[in-house]
Image 1: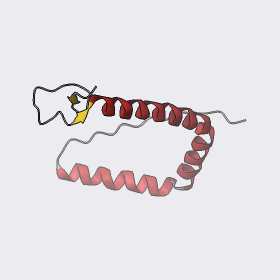
Image 2: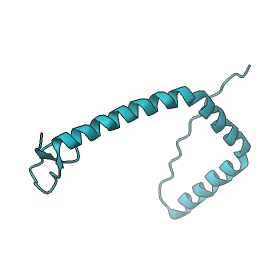
Image 3: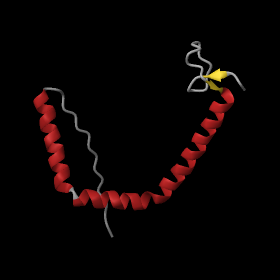
Image 4: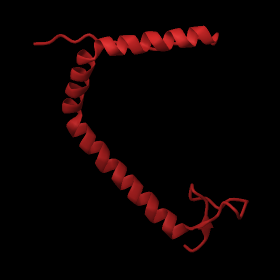
Length: 95
């Protein structure tokens, strides 16, 4: 339990990487996992409200988003590097 481990909970061949006692690393890992689980559940619960706010912001700022995309496309094209744009859209029928 007192064996020193690296940031991934493993004993590294380099003693420089082994800084944290295993028990301390394990406690931190369990806390991170519990926090991640609780946060994921809370975000899932809030998802409809988050989606509504994102949609509201996007429809409100359509012009500025278009200007920003166009400006950045022009900058990338002028730099001579490959331009890659990945966009997805979803059509929803509103009641």
